[in-house]
Amino acid sequence: MLLFLLFIVAKENRNHEKNGTHSLKQKLIGKWGGLDESSPVLQFTVDSIYYFYRNKTYSYQINNNDIIINFPENKGILKNVSVVIDTMIFYDDLPEPVKAFRFK
Image 1 (tube, rainbow, N blue to C red):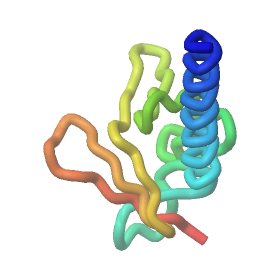
Image 2: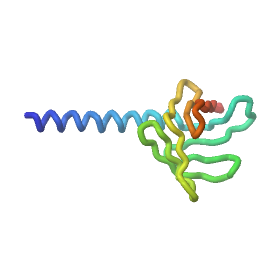
Image 3: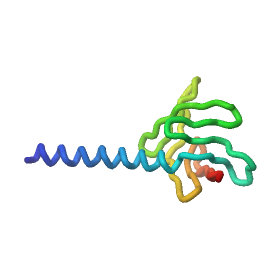
Image 4: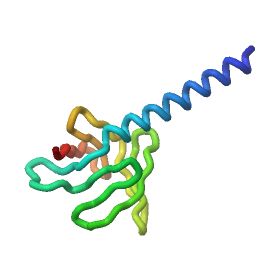
């Protein structure tokens, strides 16, 4: 009985993490840029990020609300990413949050 309960709890935790990652990924899809910018800086798709100024696409993964970007030379990390309506908030190496805005 105890083993069965542990299995159910572990399965629910995996489903919650999977659904949370899927939900964030769905919210990220689209073009994003900074305040007062006339064109987007990046575009998220289901499996990649396109950087307009580099004219390059990179794959990414989501891990506990962190986005790991697979650059050829290293991995970039956007930490504690959240999307509220049309505003993406994340942290990088600075302690202040970074905000990006959805282009429509």
